[in-house]
Length: 424
Ligand SMILES: [Zn+2]
Image (cartoon, rainbow, N blue to C red; front, side, top):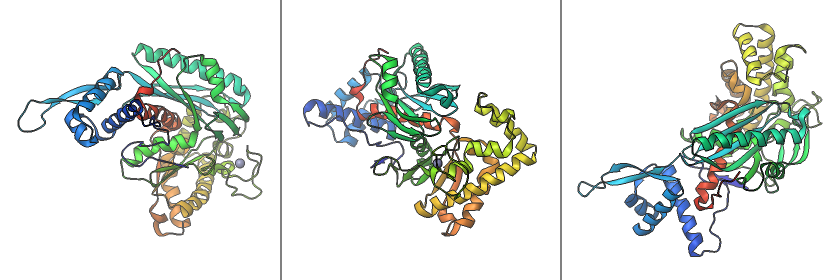
């Protein structure tokens, strides 16, 4: 299954349109989404232009716009003149003030939340350090629910409300049932993520969805890349776990059962180190955060203390690297060599236009990116690495949470009238 994302924005994430029966009410809901997406993708414009571009009668557009304004999703903007003569008419634009989509990423060492308004602007961003493996699912779900409640209060103070929550989890997830089947880096099996959150948030909580973290990161990165006309990319997370999200010809690749992109568990080192998944020699054991930290620092070194915020630890490593600390630079050499090995294999198979490195790879971008590009040039069969450019994510550690927030907002763009009243 794929989801078509091609275009200037996240066009289609594979969600259902509200229209099924083809009756008048569902047709109206479909048309509400059509108008809202047009304003998102093509920018502010007057009613007459919307009528021309959608092929809908002007009176219908007037009614649809009135409903979108009522829902707080659209507002009137600048006055624009339709032609050389005639009175100017007001343009309509997306209104970012009323609703937000929430993305919540659960990773091994932290919980990250991003709330984006309907225009894609950050309304709330929050990060809490934790140890998911030691805390276990119940405590992590408690913390997640508490963070969502606090966010909801902040949004309420801004006059906004959350319309959906998308949880980003590492490993193998079941989107339909909302269950994290197997997340080796969290040490979790069969955790009912959506059920657990709904139970804690109580009745009236906005719809909650679940998706793999790297796929959401890829969605967030694709929004950036598509503006540069890049429609084939691989997003690689560099964290405790190493995940991948693949966009091929503008589509998010999910695979037959939704597991495409588990690149961290390609077995590249034969009888190499033991992986969290129980096997040996996975790509993740070579280039994951723990590999970097164990190459760079002895046990007991503060950069290996999981109770300290990750970015603080990385800042210390960055300071060492910038000073030319031999152990840190030697650790980077090993990581770069292994990244070359795994990414060249992916580039040979998928021929991406870009490989976007996220997480710690991006954090140490100036030490890593150019050298990984050189590795690809040597290792990939096609000339010039098949035209593939290696780049650092500009979204930092919030890419998956941001992708989750975008996916949450996509529900509004699919079915604006489906927004549920907020009574969290
Ligand atoms: Zn593995």
